[in-house]
Length: 439
Ligand SMILES: [Zn+2]
Ligand SMILES: [Zn+2]
Image (cartoon, rainbow, N blue to C red):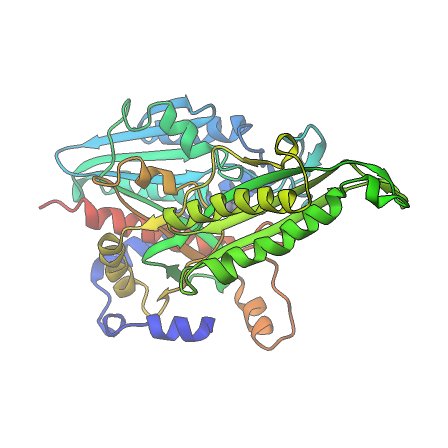
């Protein structure tokens, strides 16, 4: 499936000769790589959790300031906004996210993280860049360096942002709420990439339209009437009610939605009771709910509330003791790659990266990158693409079934960072130069 997608993506354009400028940019990125890899290893060894990216932000802000950007720190708690005005033209925003994850690294790399920190739930944990945001930040610096060196080739305003707290889905909102689009030039185009654990290193994948899903976390508290396990007739068993809710929830996707409309309702946690012979007085469910379209999301959330209420009523629970359904706010909205803009950028990249650019289906993961487009859908064109990170030898072993590849967020995720960083730097620079080309 993946290989087919890659082959299908190698268009006729890829057969055209690579323009001279391509080699010039590729060589310039290659020359920057030793410095970028030193930065990468430093970032990798020193990850920080969501909204704790203080040292990361400080280090990178100093670098872009030295490159001549006007830099504002502390936007949306730990976010950074770097602006470079270079004449008339469009406003292009490039985003990298900064946070690591509460994961104890097990890659065995010489620059593996040994950091510890206090997670959101108050417990001490290891910290790791298990989602590869360190590759994003390094390519972000690489791109800034290339665009500054090529100021004579473009015209417009470059806005480069470092976003905190992507992993908890709050960073983009925090930056927007803190005036990202009012205190700073509002972008016509926003671009980003994410490293990918399901593609070989250096391949570029993209989806047109929806790329990532709406992500909702839902809690359901199901009251019952507790009592002795041997006298069920004197109780209302919340475990049976909650079990009925879990089963009935499966019909939301399978029976209520149009089969072509993708969605997920997963009950990831079901907690109730403490002992064999006690019927508890409460059960608790935790759900993740995924969709693309807003109306699908609405249908699922309303359906969950309806089913929870109806199952409790079916068990004879009174009006004042029906389940309490809480939808976490804010949620992560679906990421939408505006189709024409996506095609425009990818046409350029297909020529440059011959045979390495392919279209890939949308996934049910989430990204708060979505919020920049949703903040002004009439003005902002938006694209996030994947840059494959699986080392070539591991990819080949996995194709033969000899190796199970780690996913993003795995303590074993070790992308081929030099290839990811070089590819992403070249791709982001080339796309930006194309958008801001002197006319
Ligand atoms: Zn992640
Ligand atoms: Zn990520």
